[in-house]
Image (cartoon, rainbow, N blue to C red; front, side):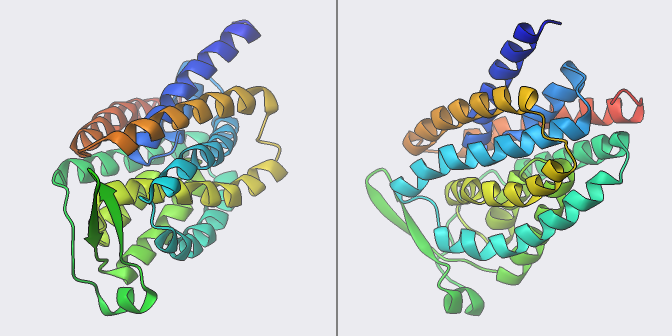
Amino acid sequence: MSVIVFTVIVLLGSYFAGLLGSLTGLGGGFIVIPLLTLVLHVNIHYAIGASLVSVIATSSGAAAAYVKEGITNIRIGMFLEIATTAGAFTGAILAIYIPAQYIAVLFGGILLVSAAMSFRQLAERTVNQQSYLASKLKLGGSYPVNHEVVEYGVTNVVGGFATMILAGVISGLLGIGSGALKVIAMDGVMRIPFKVSTTTSNFMIGVTAAASAVVYLQRGYIHPAIAMPVVIGVLLGALSGSKILVRAESSGWLRKIFAIVITLIAIQMIYNGIAGKI
């Protein structure tokens, strides 16, 4: 395969990854890593390095639009980022010493869990009451829907914080930004509306990925020839996705896309990991 063909495939695939990652709050890594490892046979450590850089680009591109529209809860994002950043350092160091096939199987397992959780929660909900800790930290907020402002509360702050530590470890270990786990922690554990959860996840994943990327950069796993087209494609896709999500009236279809796509990718990653093809 020539360099030009490789770059074009990576660019197009990364655009799709950025678009889907922005719409669901996943980040682009869920598509970029399988694309690089399964389709283009790139070493998974270099794929993770490129993915981490793309996650930073996704967060930078999409988060700005969401913050401007008043959907992102910056206070929640900054609070939970304490947990994810600490976890990301731990995960990135662990990844250096774990064989690639085990990382692939773990990656697939995380995807399947994320898909199952997404199918379980199909209805948008808003909790008006807040827990004691959420009230003290002033984590509640509001977001615009069809020219109206919807108020919401936050519950189970401790459970959400603990889940975010795990999300950080997974981010550093697999290079995915852990947007799925962050959305699950906010939407499923803390009862934050799904649209707010996805946009706040987009705001957070760049900071988490930056912490992990430092370790990969020091190890030489971030290659410019791979990372550059990934970053450009993901950033353009993230910008397109942010425009669609801001205008979307319902987030139910986002959950279905989220679950179907990552289930298919998970099966491929687990199979190839067990078969030793990665």
